[in-house]
Image (cartoon, rainbow, N blue to C red):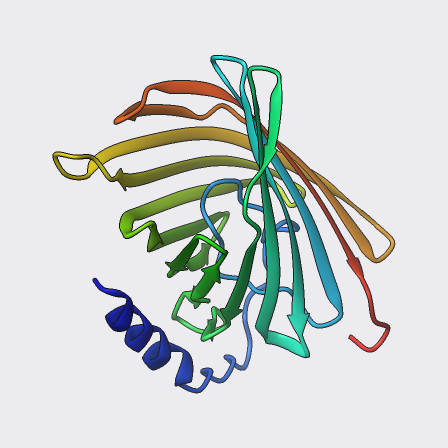
Amino acid sequence: MNAAAALLIWAAMSAGPQAPAAPATPPSRFGIEDNSFLVEEALNQERGIFQNIFVATRSRDGGWTGSFTQEWPLGGQRHQFSYTVPFSRAGGAGDIGDVFVNYRVQVWDGGDARPAFSPRLSWSRSAWQINLPFSKEVDRFYFHANAGNTWADDRSTPFVAGSAIFAARPMLNLMLEIYNEWRPHPSGHRRATTVSPGLRGGWNIGDAQFILGVAAPITRGAIRDHGVLGYLSYELPFSKNR
């Protein structure tokens, strides 16, 4: 897929009207919804709420990679702006990567039989990315699926991902995430697969929500690695008119 085709697909999906919400939906078993680690959920921030997300992974060689993301609704839940600051540390030296600016539109909100769908377009000084995330709650499970591509230096890295999250309690979830990407190689793309079992829990303190998570990602294929992932999210209101 070239850049022009990707933009045409993006425009076609984003232009459609949002489906009306179903008249009634059963209460959710999840007190935590938009706090995945590797797989993106299709749920934009609610009106008047912004989220701070910190993720860091320590690999088997002792190096660190991670990111800080801040998400803001644009007037309401349909449109969302965010930015992501990546960072890394290896061999005693740290580095901050190019900042990504992200836009998502809530095409479907998951309030009827269809899954939630919120396509994202991201760009930085040296790369851009498109992702198509879907999310659906089924009883005590939340399922998420992603498909997208990253373009950098005239090379593309396609990816697909999926996760299943189980609500052991409303504020305590068991997670299994699988992330596949096809990395550029002189002989063609080579796949790297990461399987990451994890756990997340949280607390509602007034109008704020505090989430902690941990996972053990294992990667095989084009690269072989394993490590420990830590996750922190702090979500709070910025407006009383929510």
